[in-house]
Image (cartoon, rainbow, N blue to C red):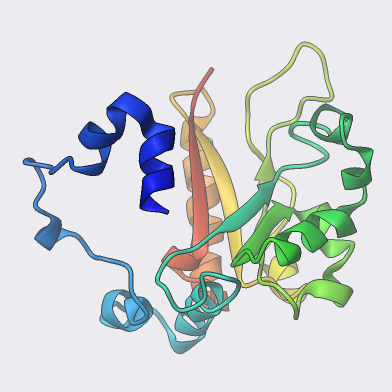
Length: 208
């Protein structure tokens, strides 16, 4: 395997594979491992419900128990439109195929919109952890706007069996202050529901 990697990296192999960072010592990093949740999250103020949600994410899929996580994110429907995302591969217009892909790929979780995951939650919420994105931009009007609007709620995500919620903030945009408040309020509700700060996923993008 190492020989194959070296071959693929070519002339950059030695520089990339033998690099040693002189700025941040590796001893100061929290290394992944099968005790990652116990070592990193247990000392915090997270509730038992939150810890269980976090553990379910780390203990699923082909990376189960390694301290690493692989999530399939698909933002279909409102923000990027299904046509823009799946016209080359129409089978993924069907939300069920998104979840099937995550399962077949051995992912720790699948992250998508409220509509996508709600439409198949009864069939799959117990088979792979769901992460529900509760806000979206809206590209259905013209000219396009660059704002994140709440489309779902933490309670709705919880009721469909999700273990986490996600949100995006366009930092630097005119609407970013409102987005920060909305997402903070949703995440606070998530902490009380059983999601907690680290089973919440925040996507940050520069304002346009």
